[in-house]
Image (cartoon, rainbow, N blue to C red; front, top):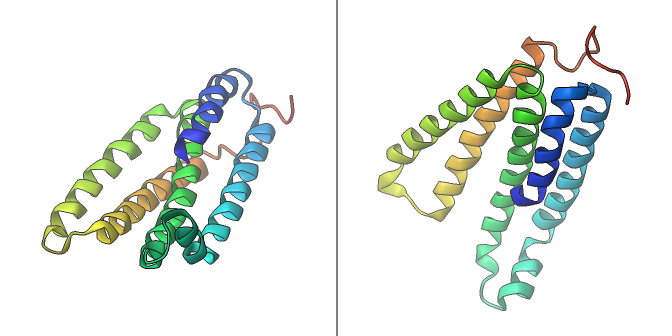
Length: 158
């Protein structure tokens, strides 16, 4: 699902760096999140029938992975769209990069702590935790630097 958003991120970053159109950015951000939330909620609520349809009978127990990945994609998309299209494009690339590095370090530390009990479920949960921390760091930066409020130099619309 992250690959689906790569063209959006790739197009949005230079546009935001040049135009600084916060109103349009917020519309894309919230629109993308609503879309991801809808798809993820459908996947969560219908995970057993979906896994049965895709993999056949007997694999319904793996539906928990679909639920976990559905949560992960919500957090990941929100985080990805805050990083370069918002933070970096508006002059805070250091914070976007730092959050990625710190998130990676945290992820490695958490994985090393769960080695004795590691399985696919634990790895996905650790990834959700790591990505959530990165999202919180980026959301903090957006708030700290007041990036979503219109002020001189930022456009209200295109």
